[in-house]
Image (cartoon, rainbow, N blue to C red; front, top):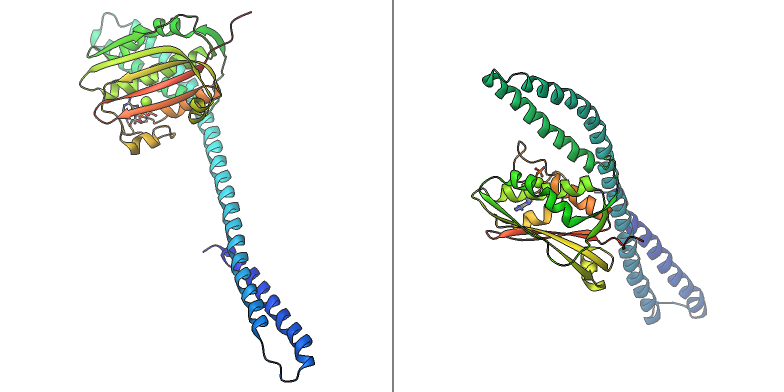
Length: 317
Ligand SMILES: Nc1ncnc2c1ncn2[C@@H]1O[C@H](COP(=O)(O)OP(=O)(O)OP(=O)(O)O)[C@@H](O)[C@H]1O
Ligand SMILES: [Mg+2]
């Protein structure tokens, strides 16, 4: 039990004591001195009743206020811890990045020099592959810790998605069909960091692949739309013109529980060896920084659709 749990009752008790004493003493002084053999009357009982009820009210109000303050302090503590975790993560990730550069470069040299020893070359290839995967992980950590340098640029989002298509198809593998529907009339210019834009789409592609182990289709659509006040509010975005890019799979979908936690940092259902749980939380932070929004729709057994809303850049002067 917290120490302050008694404070509201102490305050109420002091008020009660003071109030009742005042009523009794003043009644006795005014009424009692005039008439001998004074007994508490109806007015005295009313006064005491009033003091008792207001004391209870005071206890309740003070208690509620103290609880509210405690909640605020707790929330601030959690935010501070997350910030400290971010800084720690960034520090470790930087050092790691330097080491990984050495590993990747050496593995590459080794790999290229082993053309006449295919068995050994395979091992060098495995080192290279694991090194690159680790580098991607570090990149995710840095973005998560917001230590990744962000360079917003103006570019046509549809052109960028088209350029990314081969890479996404490669990430999906042979069993998943990738289809793009980048409809409508352009230009679809957005102002955001292009590297983060690519990594967001690749992250979503990999999530979709993991959700469709038996294969299926991944559909990427983009369209221009205007969000009015009541459409923008639930997305925590400002009303205006957006480019909505949706990434829809036919995978296993998410239960309500998973959906509620999907954007949480380090939340993964894939096991520690396969997922860091930083994919969607990073995307959430990125979209918020880009003054956009992200929406999630998912039906278990049917599939998942993630929609990214990028504010359209004003036409170049
Ligand atoms: N397209 C999807 N279909 C079904 N579930 C998904 C999909 N995308 C995300 N999820 C669920 O949300 C969780 C969190 O996703 P997130 O991308 O943040 O982390 P992860 O994919 O598990 O790990 P990482 O992205 O680091 O590889 C996943 O573990 C999965 O349960
Ligand atoms: Mg992921």
